Image 1: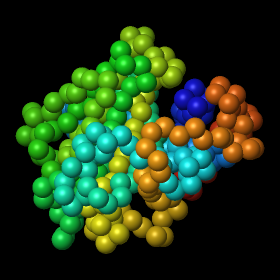
Image 2: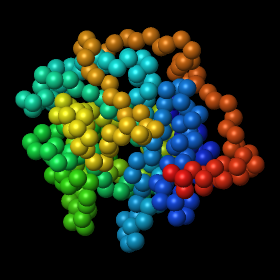
Image 3: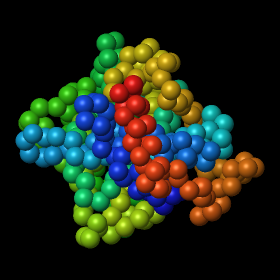
Length: 301
């Protein structure tokens, strides 16, 4: 689906930047419109923290996206995923409070950034509040990896910066860049996506168009993290019953190993076969209508 998602976002390039004064994130409206067209394929496109200038005034400069296949995974597996191998379970749930309780997946998909992007704004994805502030364990581990193991993840992390998403000038001096085909990040720590090379200099990530950079992503929730989530005691990502977003999580509870799961009838998901009808905004007239819709959506949101 990678090329299809990028194709949809490229068609929406004129709408990546939010309307002046709306306070909306870069790429949020484009992600919403792409999600509308990709919904029947079990995909959703979200806009996390934007790319950011590295010198004053440190303004936002462009979008980044997270492409979620969680809805599709729920169609394929229900809400019960196969258990991970024992050695991985020990790594992810080594704390005594978590070892014998369910592990959950709160997000499956991939990150996506256009060529020539500045580094992402420093952030934490989720953290505990109140009685669930962080203590002695990782509650929301995040596995990132490249399909092609000759490529390296370049996520940038501030080691030990468990600051509930807040950052200071000193944190930028402490940034360390990962260089491995697979990494595990504590989602409560400050981190960011690295800058991406200009299109003329950037080879395509495996499964992505030239210039675009993608990294596969599995966001997990241990039993301790679930306790905080159920108590409505998280920041960054919060449980909000009134939200239109789907925050359901899948539970790892099936037989260990990789299950061969048949694709449900009607999804038409043979690799490379997915396609969409022409976008309504492919024409200049359609773009004009979409510009009006963007202003209405952003200022109402």
